[in-house]
Length: 82
Image 1: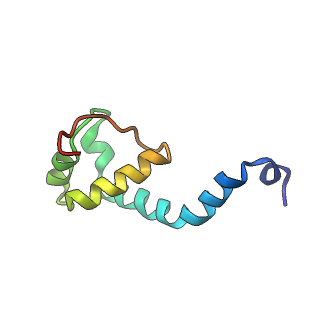
Image 2: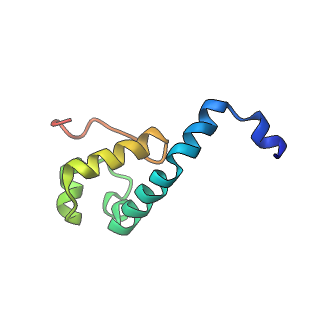
């Protein structure tokens, strides 16, 4: 066990262990859909992004919300339906 692992917050470490696979799949899916290119640092409604990528809007919303919770994306108040 390295010194870095010993000093991490146990709750954070457990979260990383439990959700690591889901994070990898979510990041991979967002990358494959080209969402970063579509958004181009501009806040957009999930429904608009889903329309441009052909993704299922409710599922995309959940994926993007998970990524925002892990600070991979920032959430804004663009969509009135959420």
